[in-house]
Length: 333
View 1 (cartoon, one colour):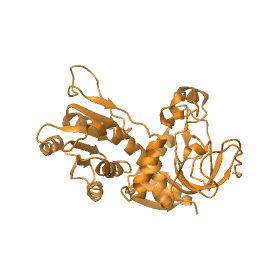
View 2 (cartoon, one colour):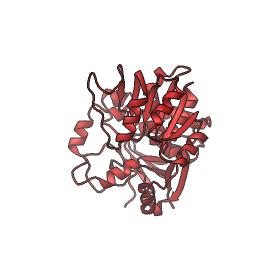
View 3 (tube, one colour):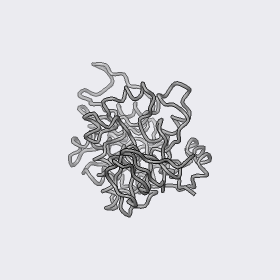
View 4 (tube, rainbow, N blue to C red):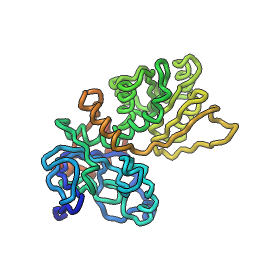
């Protein structure tokens, strides 16, 4: 591809690292017409790099500054976008209908490349001397985890228990964010022993494999009353069932994963009385700034496997097979 030339508010960055996640698999595997994007476009929505050129109306970081990209791109002018909440842009339905793309690597060219054009400097957050392979995945895995924790944080007083389901690229960061920003007891669940070892490294107070008795085990850890909050980074039928079984009355359930599971909302029904359900999507620009601040204080560290960009196809296959511990990051070679 030719070198892009930034115009108006656009900013060109030289990519230093780009994260790869299961959302990329959803895009790759989508059938024609399933997603509101025109193809082809370059994947990569977790991107860190250096500003190399700015359009004449560009704002924000100067040429030479190292940055991370806020990946959800809204209309840029509605009240939500003006507040940095492009992830909940009021005009997203219009953008989808026009098939213009709603983010980096999501209908518009992303960061699995040497250079990337960003619509506005307002979408860039300086990272100082933070390593690019750390900064890149924080823009989605870290940001989405932070946004999910923020949705339940008001319930996490000292002594409260929170269950994290799925200790992968997002879940292992959620544990660290919970430990850094709350006094809650963090209980981790996964189907893999190595994932529980990662949860322990990240500061979980307790970890257990998903088994028929897991709900009873977790309730035992909460004096029988259940967890105040559950963060489900899987979203499968089995994870949602476990979430409902361990949730305390009046508790918070944040469903982050897109594993194809469903909940039936009925009153009365299986959900504990007073349950509040949220569906966090990505996160806001101010939250990304908070995530970077945590990383710069060494309160947040991504467990990464680093690969050259030229190996992207092979890395995608590894991710699909579950053979990646933490987050896969591609570096231009």
